[in-house]
Length: 313
Image 1 (tube, helix red, strand yellow):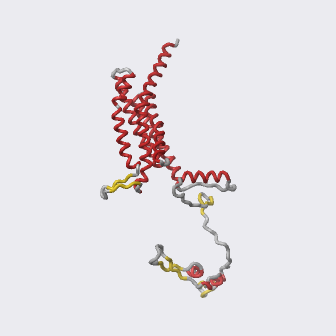
Image 2 (cartoon, rainbow, N blue to C red):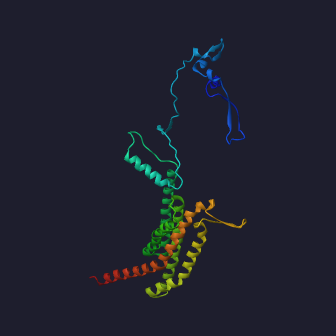
Image 3 (cartoon, one colour):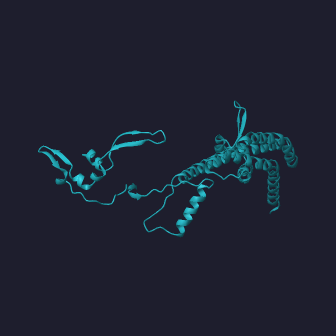
């Protein structure tokens, strides 16, 4: 019965082939001639019964009606999906923001809502995960630093480099003219946090060691800046230089003896490397200049508070 209906409508698929001048396969279908494809032809179909072949019109009434599309529902709510690609050279976030602004200016009818899926949904999920991971990493570092330094001020001083290095991240992306992506940019920011914290730990640990040896605060800070200058610079410079091929989208083919720029394999890592390189360059200056100044500032504030407490009645 189903095959007979297909002969009147779309035809029965019996095979397919691909012509020499085409890339896609072509279906081979068998169906009635054009003049026989009508409701009348459907009415002439016969159904086998125990009393013989009986016309299907004895059981079915044929009535032409408009075609009904497929209805999709999610959580018992009717859903209509609209798919679109972003034009080359444009950002997904910009296009989604423009759509949201357009919907806000011309609200939809009551009972109709819009939800953005696809890449926008993936970015929101990645942002939620990376934000949680970043907070957990900062909390763990704070606990470890408190147990090692036994000083809340020095712990905050180390962690402050993470916040201040975000300016270097933005500068690095501006210089390389790349947008900040949630996935690769967020992973780069988390990796950068570990590097800049390590530099500050080395600096402050040396300062605490010199203070334990009995050196005055000013001399201990000066000796710390001199002794840790080369290790901090070597760590930062070697890291930035190692990331430069990815920042410049440089691909070296050793077997083919050629150098390629903007190779497809470098597109994915360019944003991550630019985030780390820019932030680390900026954070190195902060570590060598700002951290010693904040150490001296903390000592001066502590002395002022102590002297005020001693002089008060």
